[in-house]
Length: 248
Image (cartoon, rainbow, N blue to C red; front, side, top):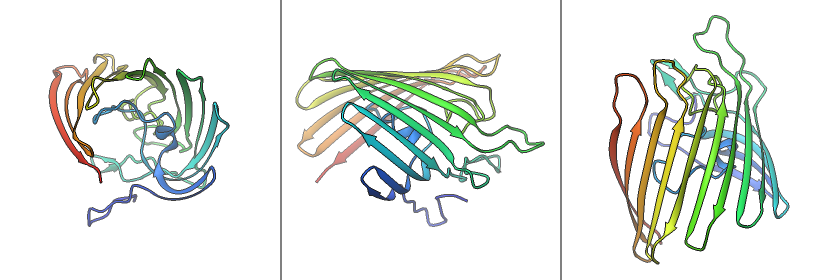
């Protein structure tokens, strides 16, 4: 059915690469091409992950471009009904991306097409388009910011920010990092997502953390999160996460 099994093991990456050609198990080109999101643990909702793929990336210095053919993943389900995005025939999903590095500003864009066909009588439609455009700006050696705008049809597996089976939806993620000292880096990110239900409000998520390098190779990261789903009758909620990472 997908990439998990009864023994709770999983393989995140298992690919072979020759030059710009990559074949194997990876994360979706739609997600990786624009560099995920910000430098926080809970970095938002911006695309799918697990998939087998064949991708090719061209890097000509300032200009770069790439294309991927993806299989998708059928592990996901809601109320026992499979909602994964695995292909339903021999036609793979198609993702195309381009980017340009102008020095201080780096621009990237990606479009993903979910090739699945609607099933007659099904509760939800499947298949469709999604796209992202991102700008990264280096302000100084200590500070950088980014903003990423996203649009997608709710029926497309690439528009993970839109509720499953909903209409098309917009979302914007923005944030930045500031290296306060040699040991401390501050990171923050905000995501807004358009509501696709008339009675609900738009959803928001605000995340901030602090990366503290205790000693070389040991980083401690406390993180605070505030999220509001916008669903009528519910309130926003705070959360705290912590991570310790030791590199050898």
